[in-house]
Length: 265
Image (cartoon, rainbow, N blue to C red; front, side, top):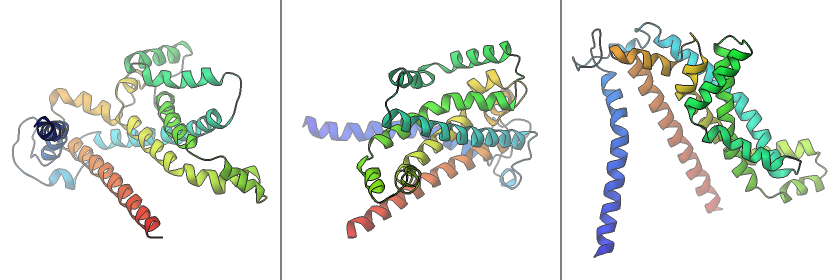
């Protein structure tokens, strides 16, 4: 009897939790079709004009473009550096390795308010003008930890004997890396890059401390919230959600198809 109750309660609470998480997303999607006037707080009627002209609100597309630039550049830098750090921590022994492992987790465990305030103090102390470069540097700093943790798990699962076999076949260390190690690491690197980009694109707290007058999309949404976020911002948010969902579905389908092919062999 207790088992039957548990079997029904757990799925119910899981469904309620998922529903609770999807309510803001549904609100964003619905109000992207709102025929809003000066504010977008009250439903005024259905329209497709917002989707036909997503740049209709002042500076919304500029802020979105800034977030894409920051996200792509910081993701590229953090992914390259984080992958190299992860390989070094797993495959090599060197002085300070334990301390490096500990320091990697500090940006992940530090509250964003503390991290943003500390970065702002450092930039001001060395008189670096706040803007695009400081935002990118800040995002690389906290994204690299997530990249290292993700790629490190992938590196730890690889068998070093594969590289030794490549060496036995007269492959140089560089050839063994690019033809054996890197293809095996690529799924983990791709996952780390997607995580880093989502963290960078979504960040507001650290960006607000280190951006100065440079405006990203989350900062634009925060500033616009007092007068009602324009429906064009909802359009862009809905598009990014659908894009992320499509990427996840495609990755799952590709993985399923690949596993099915391997099982058929």
